[in-house]
Length: 554
Image (tube, rainbow, N blue to C red; front, top):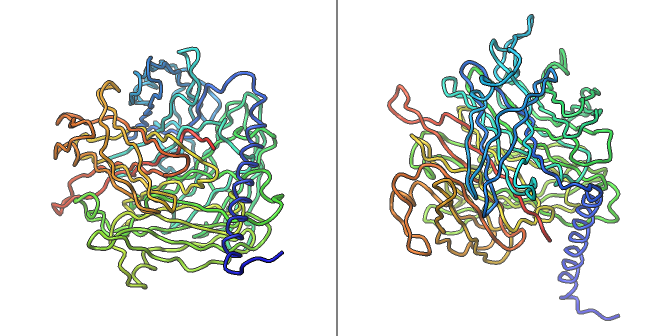
């Protein structure tokens, strides 16, 4: 057969794209098969971590997707010692977001009195401090009868303002799981940092979890533990390593002994109390069929908001200077090549980009890249502020896992959001749980176009307990670029929406929903909270929040 040589690269690209899409559909189909056997729709979400002590509260924020009726939910907490306690039901009005203090609920419930383990270092967040409790939480639908876990979402925000410590745990839907292996990456910029992994069993039967810790040289330690039905565990990596120091860069692999994806949900956390450094991140799922893929394909990963330089470029407040740190791990059994690009703006607001040099990832190898150092070395046009990241690699959708943490040079500010695969998460609707303009809080939406064509999102802010809505007049977003929605500015400047309405000046709390073509956008929704310093400036005092897509469809 005769082929014009100029068409061969195009043909190869088309074949590669088709293989990748087939692989993604195959992986999703395998997960769907494993869950389709359920005769009863999933009606529960799970968050593997909450914590309270004298100065710390955990706030549960829940957003409803139900249009016509309120949704009533039952929170059930699990403590690390196995106690399970039902809290008071909460009712969320249609399309609204409700915020509940877990501490106030615990004080009025029959919860065991907290105890402090003896002979142990006392750290924030692990239950070792006096008058502290830690555990996981399950959120069940009570009514309406037809409602399922896809009709709401939420997170747990753990906040200690006096010590400038905070962390977050998403509510996870086990029905969205694609495999029975979880991968967690870490990078510890400060000495004496504590590394934790919170695990929760979402089933009523005991699950055995095999896990191993790795650094660049290979496996450091391995252990097995059994989590009882609906139980929770908090793993301190330092205790597992014993006399071995915690490596600056590493990974953890968790495998559980059931064919049911989603039986275990987990979250990682780093803590250095002395400087007020706290970071929390989602563990990435590895599809069970990853290493049995028929042939190499090309896949993409996207992150909506790598933050470069001065935070004041976005918030017009604060003295923080952030470095975006990219972590990558090849979880396959073969060599993989990764190429990346950062898409942002120059000082005049025009499109600019920073190329990430090709990386060859050996099997089971983890790398760390300080993207701010790359920017300074290149001296290119990319200006301070949030930028989107695109990674392309010659592998199937879950053969490379990635994390992106933007960290202030002082360690006081950590901005995290998931790195996502548009092949696996073909979201047509994404819900930002809350925006908060109380006091010195400032909330944003950062929307990245993951495609090579201009795309226009539909963004709706809801407030007044979901009764009122503001339709953002969002412009078309250029290929691979992002747009920033400053909710406080929209309110204060009285900017009209597409219907001519403005946000009332007293609006302080609400949520938002973003509609689009399948997989066209990834979204971040940070909320920053500021506090006065002795120097008379402003400094960030809590951890920004993150978002995960809710509705996936090809």
